[in-house]
Amino acid sequence: MEPIRVMIVDDIPETCENIKCLLHFEPRIEVIGVATDGEEAVKKAEKLRPHIILMDINMPILDGIAATEIISCRVPNSAIIIMSVQGEQEYLRRAMASGAREYIVKPFTSDELIETIYRVYELEKKRQIQAKNLPQQGEPYEGKVITVFSTKGGVGKTTLAVNLGVCLAQEYGFSVVLLDLDLQFGDSAVMLNLSPRQTISDLAADFNQLDAQLLESCLARHSSGLRLLAAPSRPEFAELVSASLVEKVIKLLKERYDYIIVDTPGSFTDAGMVALDYAHQILLVVSTDLPTLKNLKLGLEVLDSLHHKDKVKAVLNRATPEMGIGPGEVEKTLGLPITGQIPSDGRVVVGGVNKGKPFIIGSPQSRAADSLRQLVCQLVQNEPSPNGQRKKRGFLRLFN
Image 1 (cartoon, one colour):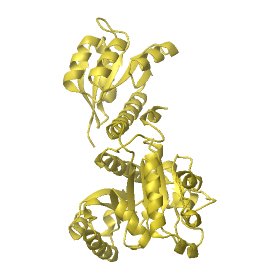
Image 2 (cartoon, helix red, strand yellow; image 1 turned 180 degrees about the horizontal axis):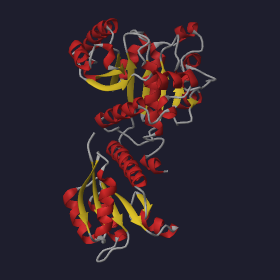
Image 3 (cartoon, rainbow, N blue to C red; image 1 turned 90 degrees about the vertical axis):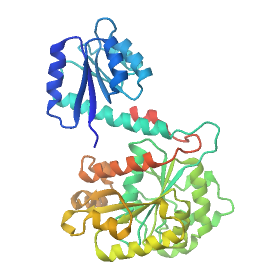
Image 4 (cartoon, rainbow, N blue to C red; image 1 turned 180 degrees about the vertical axis):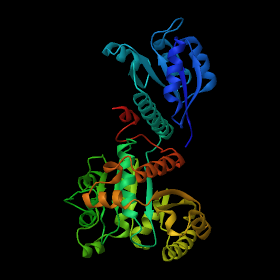
């Protein structure tokens, strides 16, 4: 992970040194510059382009509020944290109005300062990703489809799809729907602790009348903001779901949602083929046992014949060095680079599954959650900008 570049702005040299000492033992934070007044801060910010600026509010020549207003316009990717001995609401209001991202009251501890820097840095990265993905006005809207696929069951497709959807909805503020196309034995609803009143098979009888409003009424709502179109309630109802119904559902969802996450069974089915055709990205879930790798290699050949291989991104699930087959060997076998790795953490992941609480919510500080966030960040950054206006939530939700 890249270092977090920090600049300190304070007219008292001792304060600057004290702050540098507080940050000295945090390996990821790098102090790249110091300024003693607002005017110097503006010049150095334009030159150094720090990720974070720690800005004192009371300084000579140009105070912290005025400097923040200028830097926010000239160096918008530098997030400013105002530092002040005044904790009154009026000072907080003025700081935020000038473009600051956070306000911290002196004196503060090293833990308070470091936690604030990390929080502001992560929010700023998400804001920048959201801003980059904002569409051009006047163009038709189209959401992005991410299809989670494997040629073998039991490798963690549904767990990945559920947590991916929750992360995009809750932490990034996107409008997201999860479409469960494991039509006979779909588990997405169970993993989200939801009891949908209607499923995708209920839409079959209304195929000719199916529109966005009717489809929306069939979606279950999760507390994270994620929506779910669940798999049929009984295996025999799977035959009601035709490829043409799945195609119509995906088209309607693309008109209203930023991301459509599609969970698929461990085989090539008619419904799953539609999801692969419409996918902007295909997440191929990989585990490091030989039978799975053999089946995945065959599956990649099929995807290549369907002209889908350029959309495939391999995700190594339950990654652990004890398995004997390392990431390098997996990449060599599949002829495909690994985009993300979710570490093996049975207590966190299985515990979350049994509670119906995705690990990104139930264990947000776990290694699995951190790895998932890194994967989501790559997926969103690699995605071309959507072609229309957001229908649900904008990036301002990140700061609510």
